[in-house]
Amino acid sequence: MTTRNKLWMVLLASLVLGQMAVSMLMPRGSTLTIASDLIQGTLLLLATAAFLPNTLASRWPSRRTRLFWILMSAGMLSWLAYQAMWNYFEVIRREDVPDPFVGDVVLFLHLLPMIAALALRPHRRQERSTRIGTFDFALLLTWWVFLWVYTVIPWQYVHFSEADYSNNFNNLYLTEKLVLLVALGFLAYRSLGGWRQLYAQLLGASALYASSSYVANWAIGHQLYYSGSMYDIPLILSIAWMAILGKFARRYPLTESEGGSQSVLGVSITRLAMLAVFSLPWFALRSLLNAAAPVEVHRFRITLCLLTMVGMGAMVLWRQKLLGAELTHLLDSSRQSLQDLRGLQRMLIQSEKLASLGRLVGGAAHEINNPLTAMMGYSDLLSTSALPPQEKLLAGQIGEQVRTTKTLVASLLTFAHPTSARMSAVDLNSILQTALRVLQPQFEAQTISTQRELDAPLPLVLADPNQILHVCMHLAGQTGSRLNPPANSVLHVRTRAEKDAVVLEFSRVAPSAGQPEWILHNAGNETGPATLSLSACRKIVEEHGGRIFSRRCADGPVAFRLELPAAKVASKSWANDAAGVTRTAVTSAS
Image 1 (cartoon, helix red, strand yellow):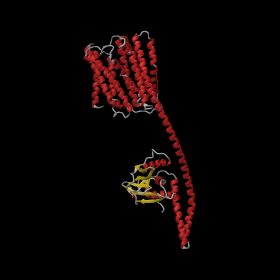
Image 2: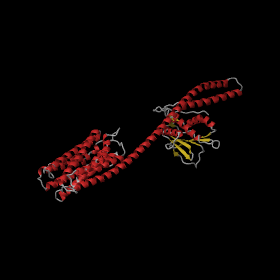
Image 3: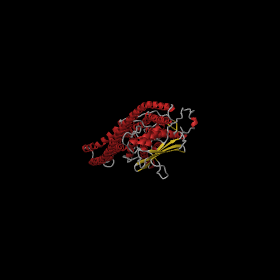
Image 4: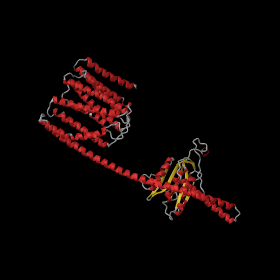
């Protein structure tokens, strides 16, 4: 505990001991009244000052936790205001507080923000609309104010009766305190961790305050109470307890817990709000049937019920409008989720088809490899036999074409067989040439030719060769599909090193200085199979620490730019790397 906190605790203990001393030692009189009021006012000031710092955003990450402390602090401020009004009469004006007292409404209202703070359930994560919950709070707050005006105000301003006023005020205030205690007990039972400790401490302090108020009212009824008497000591202790609670609230781990389903309290708040609305006709009927009340009290209460019905009815209509809008939003979200689910299902079916096609291509490639191996062996045998030079030349050309076909089949096998990611230092030029070789039959069928500007040597990149091969094939295929033979039938491919990155570009026009700037590609707002594939490519590249850019025009992307970070380790160190990363070269046939 810091020195400041120790001094604060000493001051708090001194005030409590001072109240005990003056209550037991000083005789009844104005001096005792002034001393007791000043001590109580100072204690309430310290308690309120202890609660206010908890409203700062820097203390709590959760907005609902801050709102909880704001409402609790509002209750403490109202309590302090009531004590200030009380001290004004007894300390400054040196006269008894009038009965009925106009400040009693402040004392009654100071518990309502605290009840609203508990209704927030800050220990649980938000489970329902904040706006609808706010309307429930507003309905209950209006109902409590209505109760005060209906029960107490008629005997203060409409038809004065001190006995009826005191009796109704005490009963209503006692009911309000019991509601607070029940809510605190329920939350202390249902919460966990730091919130349970906080609720339990609040329950103890509130129970001590409620019991001390009840005993003081009993003493007043029997003409035993006076300001500064022994009946004020429990009240002083409850205020000191609240002050300690607010001062050291940061020591409680107030974190939100998961709420799998809406809690009983959350449902009860809505039901109580609706019950409060439906109780208004009962209050009006009760006033009509109460023959003992004066006529002016009847009129006041019936008018109050009608006006409150109109106000709370308007709030209910607005609440239902918001609820309808929220249900419509949830319905739209459900429809969108269903559409997304169907789209995902179509993607999974298409992926399964592609996987089956890959397995078919892999099997066919294995079957093709066997006769190709035999053909290559026979062509080599013919090339070394005693044949005329022209026939040897033909045998050598056959062998060259067979080797090219075997390289293409090997690339197909690499593409078709899914393998786990194996990061290694690779040459991007070699991967690119392999991708273009696999796509060459497709380009020839579309009468598309390629123009290559490959810087050599390029820095190595740390990547999975198979995944980057897939990305290069897809970007080249996407760019080539937008070509317009024969007017535009050249796919331009360019690689180069830029700072600490290796750059690969696919475009349908030759690179020039007047072209639009590259834009970081984002396929999130587009639809279609091609866009989904581009999203997958972007994810692969981002996992490698790179980025994909695009140039756009009226008919869509015309060029793609792939950037991958260069490997930071020199090529000679890859063979001896402690992580076991090996250098891989992806070779290509001419």
